[in-house]
Length: 548
Image 1: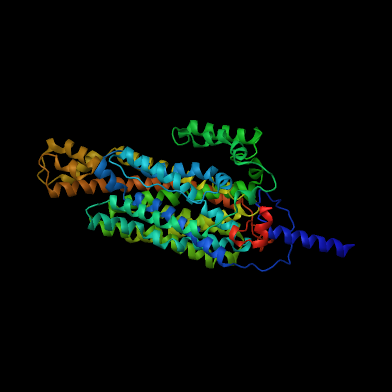
Image 2 (image 1 turned 30 degrees about the vertical axis):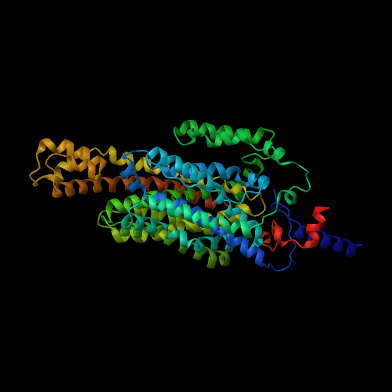
């Protein structure tokens, strides 16, 4: 009898390995078989990985290129104080799409979507950011999808390889500034480049990526597509995506609290925030806090650093500006190498999170001390900071995805970017515009230049805008006076950026505390099992059986 039971258990295990089963939830105490087959990758899986990597490249390109050239867009179409919403709208819409993107992909088998747009005003460019965000929300699902098609023990390697694979997209900032420097298209050339890039990578996934289709995923429940659509948490999505989540923050917090009660007590088949997952506060909730608080700089730095470097260090050369913008992608590439070569060997994810978040918080503090003459400190800090931000994010993704519905853990990454960018840019802008001694500092810097005192108010007003057009209309202006006013602007922004980074250390401290409260991934979950099999991995016999 024991032999017959063991044989039956082995047969059941092999059947589970062969079926394309989507894991909705797994008990954290589940016992895993130790004698499993060693993981193997076939050609179909490798091609599917490359297809998903191409979507990750396209996603990164729409994040990096527009955010690094925002000052040029604002100078051409503005000035408009809302120009940073070109990027914020991208991250906000992506977070909304990601929150339901996995479920919609399960229903409709969505592979990818992207729309590129340009405009003639800042408001139209914000609309283009919304369109980018809609497409990028689906493309960011490459993170959970790639973890579904590889063996569990290789998930960390799979997400780690994503970062170096994006080297083409990481060159986006320097390409954007090359368009500005060497073509008549200017910054618009970057958008045409994005359009061509996405068009090219739109073909590849359609040819080689064949995820489980609707029949495979729902062959046991017998539900139709529209039945599944009706089971989506539309009310929760409305509460989550309300504009009030960003401003004012008080109403946003109330919306989030309402979302929590709705998800906990409403009778929902697919709640936006499944309560059963948040009850696992160490394995899930605290990891989400690390992912949210610790990763807020991941998106916002792509806006903050190009702006800071252009104001303080780069000078007028667009190529130099592009080179400074490339420091964040350089650090991200280093981070990917760290994740591939070091993180899997160490294990102990909890202590890795503590280390990375502590280092990140310390480096943010270093950025707060950067002044006009601290160029080397700024460059080194940004590169090291970028290399410390990404590893805990990728570790968090794998910790969240093992044993639960993979689509859920992607709700927050773009949302944190929208929140962080809105908060940090507001602090920076307010720190500059409300600098109490700005007018006196402008006057102090222009003393001895024979500039009439009667024209100082006009100069202060022009310096607040800090554009060539604004300086041009100031009576009695000359090159020396302009340079003196710009120096006062730089000094004011040094203080504004310092305040911004000091505020970011608070979120870093929260991430460190949350990291201490997490729990290592059970080593038994890092096995050779896979969540899904691709459609083109099935044998002819399996396909024939499904048609019967």
